[in-house]
Picture 1 (cartoon, rainbow, N blue to C red):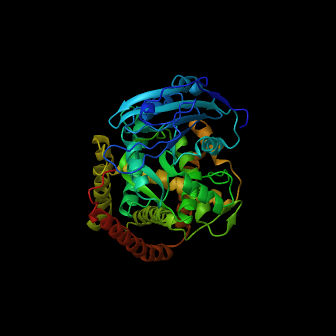
Picture 2: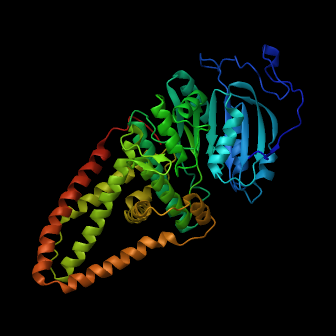
Amino acid sequence: MTDARSYAPQTRALTHPMAGAGYVVEEHGFADDFASVLEHATVHRSTIGCIIPAYNEEESISQVIEALLGQTRVPDVIHVVVNNTSDATVKIASEYSGPHEITTDLGEQFTEVFVHDIGKNPDKKVGALNYGYSLVEGYDYLLGVDGDTIADSRAVEYLETEAVSDSRIGGISAIYTIDDKPIKGLVARFLTAGQRTQFAAFNLQNLLRGRNMAVLGGQFSIFSTNALREAMKQNHQITPWVKDSEVEDSLLSLQIKSAGYLTKISPYARANVGGMTTLSGYDAQQVKWTYGAIELMWPGQRGDTKGQPFHPNLRLRWFENFGMLTNLFVRVAFLTLLAGSLSISAFVFSPLWLIPPAVAMLLNLRIARTMASCDRTDVLFAVLFFPAEIFMWIRISHFVRSWTRFLSRKKVDNWAMQAKAERGGGLGHWAPMVVLIAVAIALAVIWVLVGPMVQSSILWIGWPIVGVVTVLQTLLMFSKLVRRHHGYKV
């Protein structure tokens, strides 16, 4: 990373918009002393350095930068760190390079945009983030923004205001969703609707847990540089992010929490992130995330990553994995027992079996209604049942693939696999379906080979077990359905 090319204006004297009010301005245009007071606030004005790690983001990078320049509280500096790119990201981002004097609702503000092309970088996003950190470590806060994340105009203002209000806060995340308006195509719109629901449920869970955020996502989060330094010190690291974790943001969040700081989610700051619009891309992303989370949850040492199964930030992860295991068992067991019962004309329909899907639809609808940007697609996704059910099967396949890959101890570059999938390559996402079909055929053969007495015994034992698990799962969904949301909108 030492031979990075930086695209920035030549060094020269600049007139800062606040230079006449007692501010010292260096030749690069940065003020040495930010002592101005935010309007409607009584706190000392902090300094914010923004990092945008960018990899092949030519379609979105201009919108990302423009959204930052359009903030009511503009970051004091914006560094676009382009790595391993093969498109026009550098060229497009460089059009914004240089100083910007901006008039906002909070008054006259100044920022400067720098674009750094660090070329081939084996550490990928982690390397770009750490390169950016070296540029802004002297600021009070580091604002991390993904190269496809477009923030609402007051997002930075909201994050900063809360961060400076409590010195215990080590980082705050915005509420994420996906803008579904530009999405075209049936599969892409279906996947986007599912991801919007997934984001909404995750954000809502964190908001209702005292706004304690399990993961300070790199999409749009602000970090106290004091907290980053403390986390680095405690973990004997020379950089905040490390490359040996599949989920670098989750690991850093754990380290910040372990250093004694709070990790929060803002109830006001919002940002639209880039979603996955293909099955292969979504599969690779989810498998990488789930695999990385399992590494953090698993007791003992796996490579350079130490498992922390009892860490408070991982409780939600345990619940998520247990929930996915329950969903897998109920669905597979129900379909297996149903097929077996029909094969010997022993199935008796009960209206009680309609209660679980009805509660699930109501819960999905309530989650959809908590979205600040809820639209007709979100409502239809919830109430039609089948879209949400198909999406659940897709998520189950990610769950199975992640655990299988982890337990096999096979060394896989999940970052590279995700990049390949996003380019349209790879067929791994079909593997769970092939396995499911093979298992179904095997069970059918076994079912035919065993005698009527064994078949009856399996049904007599199996149905009550599935019934009990389904009742408990339905009660859990009902408790979420009637839980107060305290007016939160995600």
